Length: 211
Ligand code: G16
Ligand code: MG
Image (cartoon, rainbow, N blue to C red; front, side):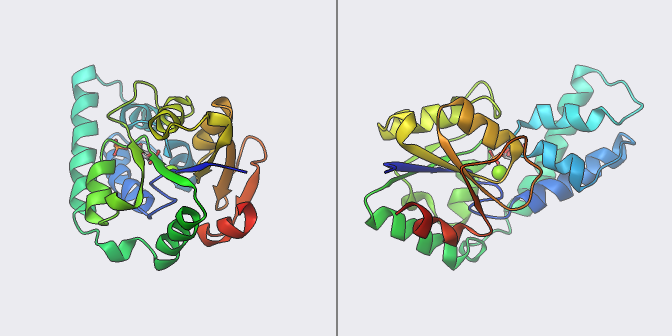
């Protein structure tokens, strides 16, 4: 019954979330703030500057806008250095196979990511050709939990929001999908604010649930 599937990138199509974690860990240390997996969950899907603000909640320092910009830039440099090691093998065969099954079934496929590095990541994975549309952090003004990125992706596909399914790994992404009037499948074990329409252990489980 869906006509399109919109995929989150980090944590759904590839495991770049571990690189975000590594890169932010260093920032947290510099600002003397605690950082663990629970705090990291809150960073998933939200923009770079919003992520920094969340980390700074635990810091005793009070930083100027310039210092914040520098910290965010340095984090992004570390993150991009890690990303440059990505190869097509970092997108699992099961993920490619799932995309193929959905496409053969006639569904349109898009990426909906808050990341400004989405183009670079898809290039490293050689995955650009797998999607009918890509909407990322460069094309939006409000990141998840705002629905803008998913609504824009649906618009690029030419499919009404109500006929799109979003696949996410993050609480902010689930909220964004539902705020946009879309169904949402969540992968993994993040603590969620409410139940998603589908809960997946792995992306490969999706075709049998929706086709
Ligand atoms: C991703 C990550 C977030 C990150 C955001 C911005 O969103 O999940 O943790 O803060 O992108 O990334 P960048 O600093 O590369 O612009 P998504 O929506 O792909 O999960
Ligand atoms: Mg994600």
